[in-house]
Image 1 (cartoon, rainbow, N blue to C red):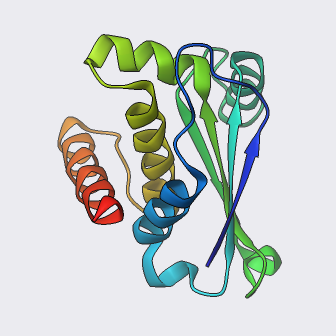
Image 2 (image 1 turned 90 degrees about the vertical axis):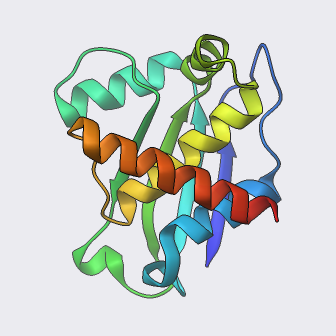
Length: 144
């Protein structure tokens, strides 16, 4: 599996997590379903994520991560399985609020997006808790 990383914005308060760590973590989160496929991780600013959230999800507000999965013809081997947009300014704010480093929060958001692509949902508190636990397991394994 190949992870393409794009940086559309520079963080103000932290450094981005290393590309190697992001690639390992996203690959682990996606698992076998992404074998032979690609995923794009895009670190973006507030304006971009608000635009995506409004245009595709009907919510005219900032969010931390949005993941778009590809199916049909775009789901073939060697083609992207999805895009994960991570809002760097929102991740930095959340890091401060949660007591995490900015790098850790941005990595967590990358994994969160990958878990969405793998089929997990966080619509209920129980689903969110399960997703958070899965993200922490993936990150620990990626760091090992």
